[in-house]
Image (spheres, rainbow, N blue to C red):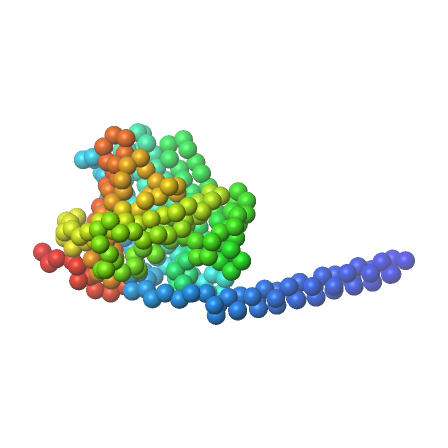
Amino acid sequence: MKSEKFKVLLLYLMFLLVVHSFAQEQKDSVNTISADTLRKIANKAFAAGEILKFDVNYGFVTAGEAVIKISDVVHNGRKCYKVEFEVDSKPFFDWIYKVRDRYSTIIDAEGLFPWRFEQHIREGGYTRDFIADFDQVHHFAHTTEGSHPIPPYVHDMLSAFFFARVVDFSNYKPGEKLRLQNFYKDSTYELDVKYKGKQEIEVEAGTFNCIVVEPLAREGGLFKSEGKVNVWLTDDERRIPVQVSTKVIIGSIDAELIEYSGINGPIPSKIDD
């Protein structure tokens, strides 16, 4: 009897192995098909190796610092960029309001859409950890809080910003909008980016000719605020963020570029000193 039970168990395990192998073949087949059908968008704005450093100012006080880093990764068998965004309050400011925020997104290098988003917030006594894996083939977001349907090529809050960097705004008139879709928590929201014109701006990293855009988010963390958020991007193919300014209940918070490296080409909008 023991011998017969062992044979049955062995056959059952073999059956599971065959089913698993078949399922994996089907999965690989789907991924192969999707690789041929997913969109491709030219990108001259950013690439792996880019590092941007910002001072975060509250009024006249430099209350924190922010860093954006881009690296190469392979995800779902595809070449991708991993974008990491970190915000830390300065040690002297920690006793007022301590911030240790971490965001990351994995962006498909060819299609410029996200595969995975992570948010780890530590602000004062508030914490939040959120992860979303985007199935851009079957159009679902599988998150730490459940699974939800998504439209094709939906963005997370960070990938939307990097997608905006590849957009050619040269034919836009002030007031015209770029419309994106942004998934956050459990829903998809409209995220409009309004073009506001051009402006020369001086920061610690230099003086630049910039375009000014205003993200209009209904929800979504990075761009959601009580007042307007304005972003200055270099007026060239790099679209480097030079400054971000947002109104808060009391005063304003500004992020100013202080240092950069690994840029994906020349920056013709920079004005020589």
